[in-house]
Amino acid sequence: MRLLIVEDEKELADGLALLFERSGYTVNICYDGLSGLDEILSGVYDLVVLDIMLPGKDGISVLKTAREQGCRTQVIMLTAKSETMDKVQGLDCGADDYITKPFDAAELLARVRARIRGGDYSESEELSFGDISLSRARQEMSCRDRKVKLGHKEYELMEYLLVNGGHILTKDMLISRVWDPEEEPEYNHLEVYISFLRKKLRFIQAGVSIVTTKNVGYSLEEPAR
Image 1 (cartoon, rainbow, N blue to C red):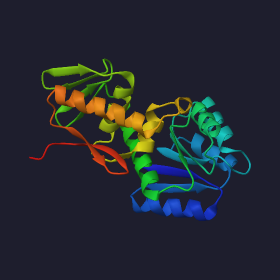
Image 2: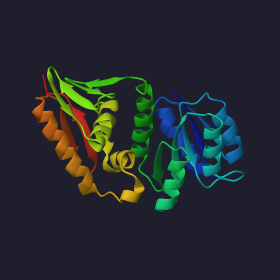
Image 3: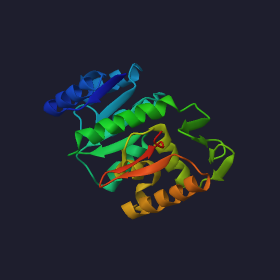
Image 4: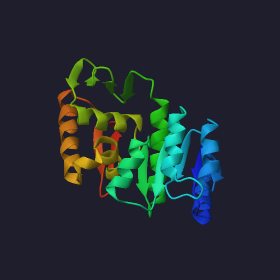
């Protein structure tokens, strides 16, 4: 997998490159927006980590131009700005995810892995994990001959968990995937929907369960054999 980092802080960019390379990715770095845009438009990358504050051309403009020219490469916005409007602007321009500095390296790596895995499954009509399946067309979860319909947010959460298999997704990752910033979601909103999903898993008598990692997030787990 090929990753592109567009970040003007050389020490940070080099550190991220080392992190990704140790995880098996091939990495290239651009230190300004103009060269970053050229690389993004080359179409050779599976994912781009893109800073907003860049010399030459800011990250929002880079992303907007890339999307206008038909680029569908996954993009994670990386920035020191945490204000809601900055997040909204980035997502409106086509960002797939957003993380704010300072960040935990393990979380960024998990987000990269999640986005790439999500891309791998983008054309599949049905997702499966363990003994459960999720129909994208019907927004329906099933286990053998038992089925249950999911509400919109339930479906979005379960799809994200299924795409990432047994990997832990942080609460912030799940919230940013499912809720609009204008909704001002809180952790307890997420917990309510996780509870709904657990009840529906029990209803279809699934062996798969949603496991809580304390103070971190959630993952799917298959029953022990």
